Image (tube, rainbow, N blue to C red; front, side):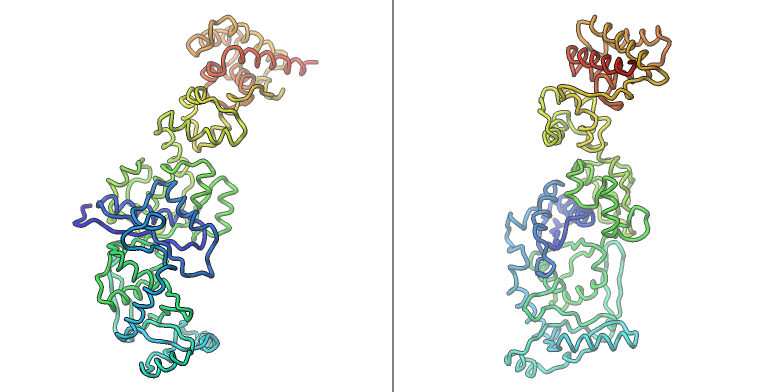
Length: 496
């Protein structure tokens, strides 16, 4: 995809809840288009709906974007030439443009009370009609409306949608969208308290901020014709419209609900970005995952953010709904962890160990990562696999120390013999320790899994760990022999 001019795009969330996968994908696609074309990515807050404001959501949104690596060029907390970037600070701007629509005959003052409107809706429901404004104030003269405003009568400003004909506009993913005007309501643009609604505010902001592409969710398709009407009423050039697909629950049946989100979290997943961070997923993997949900390229394609920028093309975005597949999240998270340097992985997993109360030795952590990283899906998996490296003592259970098809006494003899072999070595390394240990297995007529399974529990305290001999090398000869001695004592207690 080559663009003649740099794209100016915006991610414009409302501070009404948590940042979820849909928001993150919308932000990502906007960011990629800006980067791909050498344009600007703008963060704007649409916060005029004070009744739905959620404390802390603005901070969560910005944190989520930064964690994902999607830094904005203009907008909240960085400023820019088209500010302010909070709609709550642009009230007078919207009122000015609302008045222009009234003056040009494209909007009008409506004085209908809530009680009257409720009554109209009830009658429409009885007649099984679609709910719409009945046009009572639509044809009031400007003089009459002006007098009632001067008298202090409460009013809203509605868009005066044409009654005849249709309106059509092009969506980059869905082609030409045509809607009969008679099916478009006279939507409220400005409430009686003077606050503009999204329909007016977003269109004004997009024009003033020189937005070239409006990439947003498909939930806006129902009011898309209204937005086109508003833009054209002002005589402005339309942006490129892009309405993205919705995300479906993992079953593919229906959109994700709050209950589905709770069930996902119980299973160790989440649709919320800050949850994914806490669960130990890395942003590179999350980005790769959400990128491909709705993008028409191979679903298993591994990409870093710079590679995403180079390959991104609006024309390849798929408008069909995409089912959330958490297994692919695991795949991409693990793949991107393995793509990091050992030093990077070490620095990222260290906070998880420290939060769990471990005293972390950086030199030892760097030693651990090469034998650990292949097993990691999330960063906090490191705790499960490698916590034993930072413990002074471990307490393996007797039952776990007894080898398969062996008794406690037989298992104790194996540990005793292993300890003698390892003690005879100058140091424990895979190269020095593994050959004589495998020779011992053959001499005993046992299977490697039986013997090494006992030793793994004895040395690490757990049945699953990184490779045994590499782990022994990092733990060190002295501590390995101490742990083997303790394992013998525990096994001896099982023979009494």
